[in-house]
Image: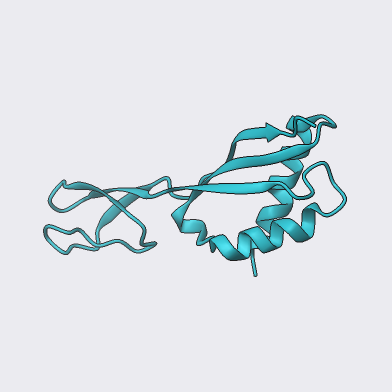
Length: 112
């Protein structure tokens, strides 16, 4: 379950931003190429965050697709596939960018 390692990185970023304040929730931009399973992420985060400022925090995942450009016909498109094919000409000669994001975009703090 690779989500544990991802959650450890996310927790470190949350703790840096929180600077000791209790965290209620946060949002992470996650590239689809990372293949993060939402349920596994939530369970993994609960495990790694136990006893931290983010203990009990509710994660939200914002998935980002891969941006693609077909090198044969020039079509641009988004994909969730790690080996995309062009939807117009079925070529596998596709240049990819993005889709491997892991960015903490917001943190919500507890008010009480």
